[in-house]
Image 1 (spheres, chains in turn brown, purple):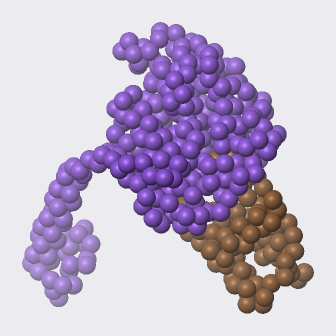
Image 2 (cartoon, each protein chain N blue to C red):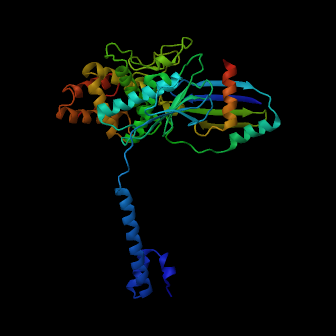
Image 3 (cartoon, each protein chain N blue to C red):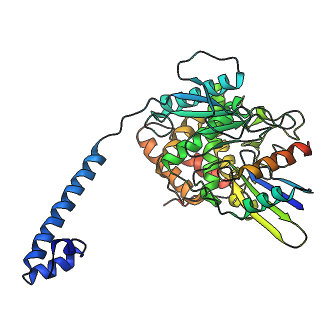
Length: 88
Length: 338
């Protein structure tokens, strides 16, 4: 599965983009795609929080959703943190 | 037949019509409904009249222990001795300095003017390159150590985030497009003023940089933003310093951290003309007068109106109106003077 992560905003205002491919356990992949499909409430008073645009594609379908600090699902948060750490 | 129970849910105007037509049951129901409504109104008024107890703006510092969780462990609160963790102590000290600046300079009792407690979360996440205000509290990452370092230890970052709280309770500027850029502008304005006070600098000594102490040597630049020279702080800095280069894209909530460079530059120029303390008062009083959807032109008009009032009270320099006009004209925002 291919992924693309765009991180925008934040105190620094410096956008970051990460792209790559990953192999996931079927169950983990299912949970990640489910996390993308759920609509989450926005936090209207969030200032300087990051905006996360997460996109997955498996060759057939493209799954994309946008989150912020207040509604980023835990499993996507962990995934993004791992991707950022690997990029260092 | 109209029973009491049935009439209760009938709208008052209909009850009134039925009552006028001689329906006694509806007359009773109308009177009962009126009495109930009156009682409810009185109760609500009493609740509104009761002044909520004013807080003391006490500081609470939580350690997120490198997890993405807020209020995980309370590690220091108001009046307690310093702890071993320097990030905790820095967040405690700087948030107190910011709170005291607003109180001593403008009489503002904490973030909301009503003594709201000041809650900070440090060591948030893993290598988290950010600091933010979420409507209730502040959260700081340690930085990745490669480009950024501890956000909680920088006075201008803490002042910037805390000012987002002040703005929320005063003007509540929405966080997109020009009102959003003004929201960011006010945070940079009080970030830089408070940094200069903290470092005991005057405007000629100040660097006018925002976030210079949270960038590492590996970061391609001196700071996050420059109020003196927007667009020059680092290799990614795209802030314009004039309306001719206004960012019209959709990124960053329609450029809230980008277009703030325009009023930031005007603020810097205005400080050179009348000094930072007069500007601080004019900008603070303007923030109190602005509203959710105010744009750049609204800001300039309100600044001038505010300056007129403050000049008439002998609180700021008589040159303030001219200084504001000159400064904003230089960034492409010419005030319309009546």
